[in-house]
Length: 172
Length: 436
Image 1 (cartoon, rainbow over the protein chains, first blue to last red):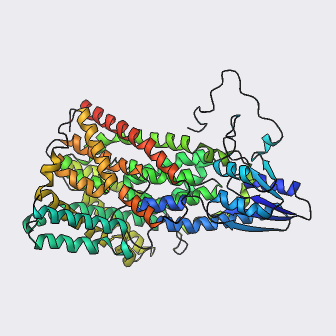
Image 2 (image 1 turned 60 degrees about the vertical axis):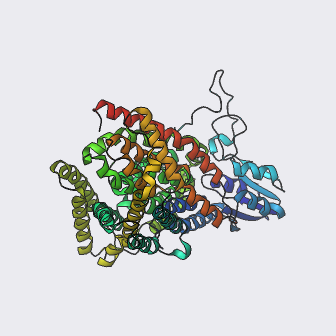
Image 3 (image 1 turned 90 degrees about the vertical axis):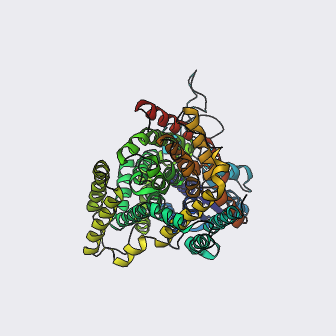
């Protein structure tokens, strides 16, 4: 049995713990992470916008791209260490949602975490990437909560007169 | 339209095209300088006028050089790495608190050491810090690059556009900062609120995660942080760099009240810190010389000459009618919008160079409004101008660029509001203090 675990910033410990709990002892566990976020692209774009400064070796996008590779590798290492059983790890390239669905083609189980708005009830508890993967995954999906206290309790319904889901964010 | 104007416009288009597309990584100056010389040789621009333009740009370029060196020395002295450590500690593992720290540090860095320092030196540190606390770095990196533009209003040194326009405002260093202070504060707060709202799911993600669970990444992420700073240099104490920057800032104020060009203060600060770093062997004379970025300085001078040729050969009469005069609220807002549009079509450097002669002589208000436009406007696209964006889209048409539409939507939502808020604050400041 092949079990895939989606490793992403903030949510991976819950996914790894779920894999440790639910994957049969004989299952082959593979940890997958996306190659990069958009930090490198953003920094590269900002540098490109600085007219006249172009010079090899100054592009912060290149430095961030190198750091992204190292950060993803570190995250996968940490996830493998946390799993405490044999596993393989792989970095996916391209659009993460498509790469993940394609990677899941031969799998028997895919472990994912909710990564959307977890504060309110409603359809937004999945981020865009996770939403796409849940919609199109070719294998069974194990969807877990990233926060331990809420994994066993149903979120309470909103109080009467509570603000609509489009209210201000908690941190703003 | 005269033949001279056509030649000047053709030269400007070519200079900008090469600067934006950078075919075969040719330095921008390698095309701009010969074209500027050619315009003078062909008598499109009289040599005396070209010389006058160079002389008026010389203090600006000297100032720019000093600030570029100062920023790089702060990096060499470990000031940005220390800022990363400070941000990580203050965040206490919360991506939302980290965003607030990033906004504050990016705003101050941009104001004091210019947007170049924020984009080139601070952004990698911001990424490393986000990775270090296990956060999704997208909102933090994005806020940092956004603030490099919108927080570059405050001081004449914050942006090359400000340096170019500083003299045309007729203001001293302190008065310039005083009038831009309220717009700056409002823009920084606006960016924090907008990024916090727009990226709220990314920001919420790590905050609920058991912190002990994230801890295993810390040693590896610390190695990541080393990439951002300087694994090859000896450990540096950034206290001296911070002190020199602080003293230089005070020096700007003192020099301004005494009628001394603040460029001298910037040069003194850069030389002082360079001397300190050289004695401690953290830098060499060669690395300090490279951080001067002489090709960039030559590019600025050449661009100034080419734009001067475009204006003198007749464009000012054509465009002059489009630019309103006076410091009424409507006029200021219109100037800011025109400047923002122009900055997005070409880029903000040629935009401010083209606008300055048309705005000069009408008080500080219109020039400051134009600076709001050219400094905030580039956030509309994430690459500074539509020209750059088009080039990048063509060049990278086959790459996957997830989320670009998202970024452009964010820019389209924030930039118009930012321009209105900042211009309103500028107008209020001018009205309260009796004009420029």
